Image 1 (spheres, rainbow, N blue to C red):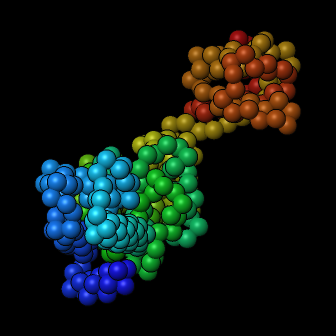
Image 2 (cartoon, helix red, strand yellow; image 1 turned 180 degrees about the vertical axis):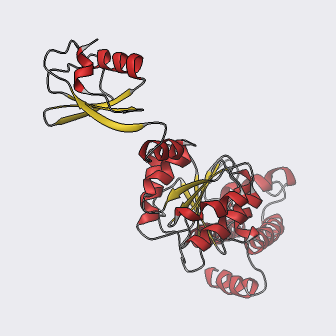
Length: 342
């Protein structure tokens, strides 16, 4: 009987594809077994009645067998065995098709050809081995939410499949198809990290066309090219390519690169300085220093160093003995003697 089913399955499977094959098998087994059961069972048997046989067939084909209905004739037993074998064949076909389907879907996702369905996510356009992995890890650690990595065709599979919160899309990064599959029009933030500045400009233009309202961050090797991006959208934040950590910081905290640029640029609104607390100062703790420098000099203390230990943004009750170095942002350098006249 199993050989008969095997041959029948091979013949039918050559003509039926996908989910139709198990459906046809179970329908054929149901109809033929019902007819056979009605012929071989005694006239007073209720197993073949329309209200009962469907239930008997389901529990028998599924190999559950509650025993509330069962054949009594030898022929009925043979038909029951036929139903069991048919159920096993059908379940095998179903599980095989399901495994194939899941494998196909996973394979497509790994190859980056599946259209995603995401909203309010982060899109990273461009892939550089090693560098991009660090950017993705930092975004994930900072709680950026869902992330989509888009790479060119030469990246054949998902580079970081172990990161569940990172989806993958592959293709021409300047094409609307990639923008659509990566859901760029619904993205919160777009990071453009091309292989060169010309590529970055082209990708940024396509991304801005897809979503003009998203916060966009672009990595440039030559920051002088930022003016070209300003023509695309003056709101695009430009970051030095050699400082990838700024990409993630700007993506998560829009505008922070402007703060860094102002602080680190000569002639900005604030520069970083340091001053050592002289002997005889009257500051009891870090909070006193912060308050005094802010009120008297418009400065903000960032960190203190007592000996060899650096503490960035320490608690306000941190002691500041003589010789402690204060690191601060201010409009000018503060001399140590000025701290004695508080």
